Image 1 (cartoon, rainbow, N blue to C red):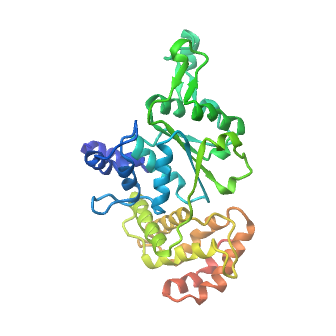
Image 2 (tube, rainbow, N blue to C red; image 1 turned 180 degrees about the vertical axis):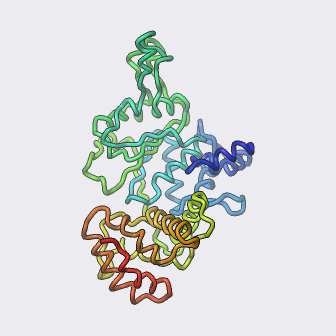
Image 3 (cartoon, one colour; image 1 turned 90 degrees about the vertical axis):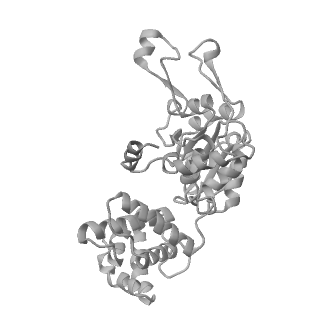
Amino acid sequence: MTARKKTEDSALQRPPAEVRYAEELAALRAADDAPRPPGWQLSLRAARRFVVGDDEAGISRKFVGNASLVERALVTLATNRGLLLVGEPGTAKSLLSELIAAAVSGTSTLTVQGGAATTEDQIKYSWNYALLVSEGPSTRSLVPAPMLRGMAEGRIVRFEEITRCPLEVQDGLLSLLSERVLAVPELEGPDGMVFARAGFNVIATANTRDRGVNEMSAALKRRFNFETVFPIPDFDTELALVEAEAGALLRRSGVGAAPDRDVLEVLVGTFRELRGEQGSAGRISAAMSTAEAVSVAHAVGVRGWFLRGEPGDAADVVTCLAGTAAKDSPEDLARLRRFLEQQASGRRGAQWQALYEARHLLAD
């Protein structure tokens, strides 16, 4: 990668995985002598190492989760079945799909973002209407969407929040996943059928909280293998992840101070309490995920640095928590207040005491 290219990439808020980890991917490809599935840029072994890390080879760990989940996901994609990652919001489903797509296909940007307004045009193809009017239907006037490109190029397509899409849009995937062909009826001859090349498959994600919104049909479910991504169960592992991710975000935001580990311990401990069943404060209905903890840690650091020229403290944690904890229910703010008043006061440590003393900063 040239110096100019590195400078351009560093200006991006969040480069895709294949850019962020380009050197690791190149090293893995150069040393990869294991058998590869047709159309894959890495073997299953190398792809697994890229996602879960390999200290001896200098490959960083990118997904904090069960390695067997990663193995099962890769095996699924090497077959003719799609992969559906399900779980609570903020459990790194999208990150995992991005990492796997980058390892398998070399690109993670063939992505469909599902939603109520998603149409089949955004999934399959649309038209350049100026060319369509002047020349009629042709390959020149055809504008390929991620699914058509993925099939034609033999790459992984990511479908985010698939259960947020209308049912008729979801069912448009049935023939693509079973017959591996996309028909373009407006075109004649061989151009009217796009057959999937080796390497094509689909990784979809769905939040468990969206169940019942647009439930997938039984026919579509049969074309996917389901894998559940669980929250991080271990405190130390979650703390290390929040510290690393928040630190990277703060550096990109121009913050010159690393996050205070004692403050992060209080933040992660608060999140774990509020998403659990124990404690008199009660469980917060909002998704108090690791991803949300990273966002709050980022905001705490930005607030402390740009307002006072120092790392954020426990008072910043209280100030930044309300926007995360009170999203779904007005009762959540009351539960957070009870936690600060009744439980934080009994915890040991200067930062826990500071959190308790700053409880009056919680927005009403």
